Length: 301
Image 1 (cartoon, rainbow, N blue to C red):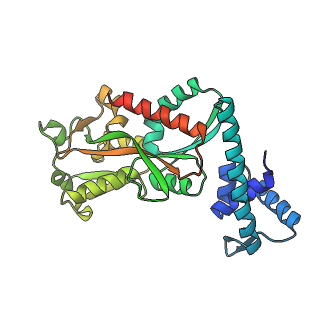
Image 2 (image 1 turned 45 degrees about the vertical axis):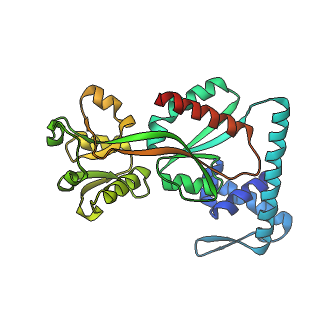
Image 3 (image 1 turned 60 degrees about the horizontal axis):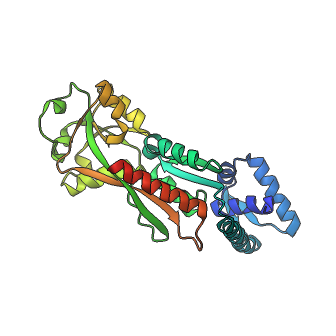
């Protein structure tokens, strides 16, 4: 409904990057550059300064960005108001999820939601928790689902599910043979495989160890991997042990390629919805949130 040039400009101005804007809009970078140049020609002034591989708004660009924000807020509010009046539930949502949630929780949830609301189009972006929070902050996505604590006071954070984490090891490992839970202190001497920097799982584990008097420098970190699947493969290959969400190892437990050992004290973390504090309620978003809360509740009972 709104001017495409203004939408493209707005994306670049939010992200201060032509490359990231192209990715978020599913466009090529030359197409994004062309749309911005068209808008600059319309206003007969530069809207961005491009120096030393950095993109900054000019004073005119700042003014256009300020009005564009207000224009798109009004468009959204208008569409939402009409849908509230007609009872229609349709539209599009872009959801971002950290890797564990995207691979093991969302497929079933979104499949059931799509079956109930076929008119709603959903796009999914996957990143680690740090990346998802950044995308919510910059309005690249409408809703984030993350696996670590979010302290940003400008965002609304709602817990949806409590996730248990356990030690995972090959069935032949010495820990698999003990009949009692693992103490954090026992992990220090063993090769340990962890997730990458910025991962919510890694952040939760490091905090747990520190809270139980195990300094991170005492750990024998042998590998750093970017996904639960890669991490499970490394543990199965006997390269070390790790700590993973119990929800990610159901298949391996059934096949007996991995075993789980409880931690003492236990370790759990919240899966949470993260979104911006909006001026108005978006019907599509509210429907998804209510559906997801009911799904998480039924799964925990």
